[in-house]
Amino acid sequence: MSVPTDLRYTKDHEWVRVDGDEATVGITAYAADQLGDIVFVELPDTGRTVDQFAAFGVVESVKAVSDLFAPVSGEVIEGNAALAGSPELVNTSPYDDGWMVRVRVAEPAQLDDLLDADAYDALIAAG
Amino acid sequence: MLEALGLTSVDQLFEDIPPALRATRLDLPEPEPELHLAARLSALAARNLTDLASFLGAGVYRHWSPPAVDQMLLRGEWYTAYTPYQPEISQGTLQSIYEYESLLAELVGLDVVSASHYEGAAATAEAALMTCRATRRDRVLVSRAVHPHYRETLRTYFGGDLELEEVPLVGDGDAAGTTDLAALERLLGDTARPVAGVIAAQPNFLGLLEPMPAIGELAHAAGALFVAVVEPVSLAVLAPPGEYGADIAAGEGQPLGIAPQYGGPYLGILACTDALVRQIPGRLVGLTTDLDGQRAFVMTMRAREQDIRRDKAASNICTNQALLALAASVYLATIGPHGLRDVASLGAARASELEQALAAVGVPRVHTGPYLNEFAVRVPDAPAVHRRLLDRGVLAGLVLAEAEPDDPSLADGLLVCATEVTTAEEIALFADALGEVLGGRPPTAVEAGAGSDRRIAAGGVR
Image 1: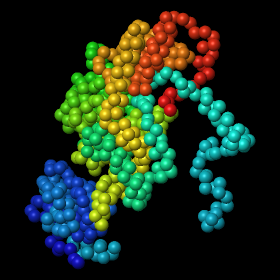
Image 2 (image 1 turned 90 degrees about the horizontal axis):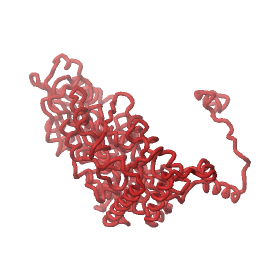
Image 3 (image 1 turned 135 degrees about the vertical axis):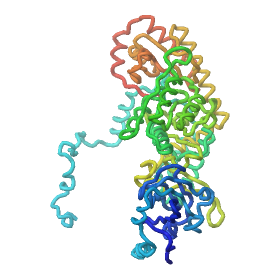
């Protein structure tokens, strides 16, 4: 199973889709699978600044509670309100309906610090 | 094994401990037959005063406990059971905790109750930390009318980056002894240092009733959470925290059928609104159905506990006061809501009689505001009066100068309380003895000698 090639990835299994100066962030299918059934996602408030690779939220499953790390720095434009009532969207549609936050990108060059699809696939394969 | 470790002696494993702190032989007498030893220990215990007319409260209260409480606790299944680490196998244990949580939720009027904490002070400190985590602020205000021991525990927990500040009390007038609302508003108004939580007690340490709704409103207006420190029996007659906008409630569960003992073990109550369910530390038991559709109790939100979440967990706590929580549940179930109301009302009535009896011998209250079953009175040279009353078989409450040495308005204060177990005879004994002591009769040589020899115990009912 390969990851979408139009996205970039962090070593902590977050993905980012960039559209102009807006970035949409979520976690990969691999991460959702490892976590198990997601029961709760804690997202930052709109307007909060997130820093690249710093924790910006929390994802909770029945067996673990993990921090979410921002792939890029910027200001939070929107959190996915649907996750409050349907956290399982992260499991069923990790790259689409299960998106977590949209961020206004502060430094586009930060994308170069991220993994592309091949590099991320290799990371998962290595275990 | 020493060989595998490359050592020659077990002592080498303890080399990190400074020599001055290492254990040496204990200086104990020779072993004795069990009967002799039992007699020796009984004689030691007999030096405690257990038949005083006790008017001591200050956070720990004597109540009658139905025999059912002890009978349940002594059962082996409860008495020696430890916190379950494969909890779902221990359905009975989980059910007992779930019932405790449910009873307390009803009592405090809040949505979520933890399985319990060490005691009231620890629960209050955890509540304070909750406010910081939930608001992402690091300054907490605590009323000076919260129990001094609780404030000391808060200071211990608040080392490092967190800031704890005390809110002063009103100095005079009818609101004297309660939290100064104007001062609170000023402290909350410092926008450069936003407040995470405001903590106040109901009744407060001096026995007085606080304007809790007003304190809550001030806290919320500044974006802070409101923590109410409560005494559980009083909730049968006072508005519970859930009704006046508290986000978190903490308190001491000892009054719920647990004897004063000698300071513990006690029961830390912690409860919160649903919005804070992911911030509350401690274990939580929930109810669900299993694969066969049968009712099943589970330990829920486990992933947030310290053994899984580690340094990001809400607290290092991984257990609860299970036996004491059971005692509280059995007490509440046996006494029932009407019984609990009677306990609280009778205590209030006795306290009122006590106030009148003491006033009749020239000892009025320090404050004039409303109280439930505890209040402060002023006597000249309170420590000496307290000692002389002890010689006459009366434990005249708490010498306030010892609990609050920095408050000159409480010098020469005695904090006294009455509960449903206080008798008219005891009140008469207290008033008569006090009248005698204040009347200037000097103590006899016998009294003076006997007083220095004794130790004080919190007089138990059973």
